[in-house]
Image (cartoon, rainbow, N blue to C red; front, top):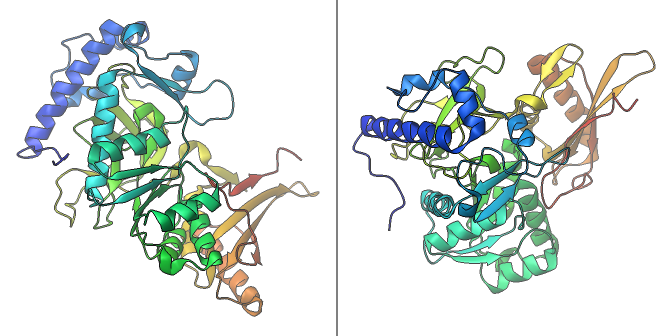
Length: 428
């Protein structure tokens, strides 16, 4: 069974999207007091969508709207039709909680199965799922999609390296699903135990955090595996709404389930194709908590050229960061992804780093980048490496920074997301 859509051409996809957009507006207007008020204020009523261009008439929805509507924001069906809720992993204030109907759960598992198909898995694969279970969307999403696809799911959850390594060997795991931080942790643990020859991992499907090219290469080399980036957003079902293909030229997203816009986060206007902006999503068949022009805060760009893999589904680039993750340092706006890019271009470095921002006694801000040397490197190269990093940061990001080269594996590893930015200026 194929989980890919079978639209004859892009016009057929556009017609499908228009039908879905009309349904969503009608469904949200009649089902949600929140949406009815917002849509009416924007002058939009059911039947008022004539073309996809009318998407621009619709109001934006934000994370604040979800928090203000807690515990069941955007709800557009009777509570009796809700069969599950999931929540974001935020740590401040009220969590973003999203409701699901049976149809939503079914659509999500179908989309996720499509991800496994896009990554060219087969029913013979054994998929070790090392992401969080519970209220989060990750674990149950990876598992339901795997079971829908027809591969063997090993629902491990994060942590417990002893059991993870035992299952890697005993069950001859071929696919890992995890954060990139967990993948690095496992790769280093496999090497430490000397069991590389007993591990048969061929693919790593990773997500949940921004990952540098250097880290991808480190994981791929250590495990001898092919890496696939999978985006995930609790508000938009969860992970599984798109994935990197085997051509590794961006992420195909499921445009038959949602419309993706890229806007300038300041002007709120669309950016030109290929330019970086904020991702905005509108769902086409989501029942319990539909999204209308939801501002994800994720920064990305569309890739308008055809993909080498031949699949006609549209693509976006890997997530570059979040619009609210921006660092302001000495009047320069810096996104963490820019630092990833600089460090990935310096030979002799590992993939792990920390950026520490502090305020000196003179009232000025200071930046220090701590970065691991490559495992094969020696301390004798540290000064030259530090100078190379400092020079590249100055050239590409236009700020001065101190650089400390530290031993490989001396920075903390995480089973979930690694923290890399430490802004201590407010603490001081």
